[in-house]
Image 1: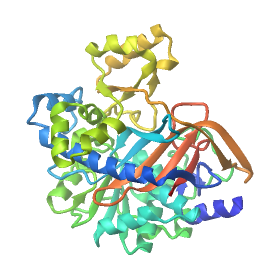
Image 2: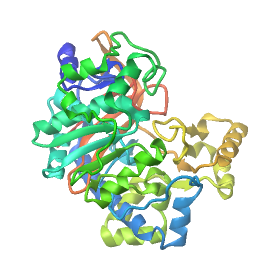
Image 3: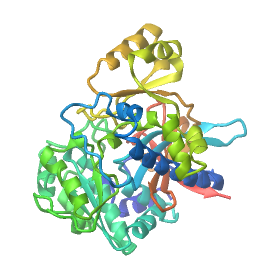
Length: 446
């Protein structure tokens, strides 16, 4: 029953801004993929962690890799490089159809500061699947606390993060959520119409049932106990696993300085305080011979896996213009990071060559080339078009035909990929969470 599914999603405690429960169109059933896809994800996870380790080993030692990662990085951004390894990320994959009917996974993003932990868990429980993300998190933590430490610019996601902390507690682990604005201040600003107001990411207008009583909602869902109530962050994090939910340029210098300080005092960063991890330039490093040589030493299968799962990505420089102009329909542009305008995530800066006439494409290329922060060009990977059944706002069954797809999975080092789910959008190649997107957990089948 549609009402039962919607109720189970709401019971997981999730929400987004003024929306309780699912803020997307829930699929009527999990999206099936073959068990081989789960094995592919595990191999990709190993190869990507080897890639980050290889890049870390070469930065500051290899001139080419160093220049690539420092290209157009704003002068005021701290160029910190943590000695700690990357322990977690969430790639965004396109499902690329193959001649044999299977899908090739193509990771167009390697998101270091992902959202949707709580959303992914809620989907798994609501559809009766194994809650592998919460279980993987509890195993990874091994008794340590998990801290979501976020920037207020992204605070609309705090509800689902608190819900994930509740899920961790159900599996014997402890999580808490800290933002750089006190929770009471965020709630008051929301109530006063000063925060989380549509049009905003994924929400064009307020839907029916919009609820701006944030604290009341959190209290009723049993989530307040997982929120840090103080105005100041703790001076020390102990042995907590710290997840930085925001890029370097989202935080004030004073707040940002907590992350390397916590690391130095013994906390474990899930995504270390390393500046270049905020940039898509890491994708451009993945085809360099010196990087692949190091990857092979860490994971012998890694170079081949990366060659299959990462699209060609290059920094936008003047030398690339002739090729990008000649192959207009094969490329997409996107901000690499450090733009100070929150346009480098959520598909906000995407420019598809196929969507422009030749003269318009050249104008976009030259405009992006003149920007004071890095931009990448990425070879366009064909996304599978799928028909997917969903439940509309009235609880009625509907079908989204020929939707474009993105598959997302959480990778925590040493754990199997978890929380795998699919997002499907209609009428656009820019696929992301939204009130008019369909989402489904993935069910792997033998």
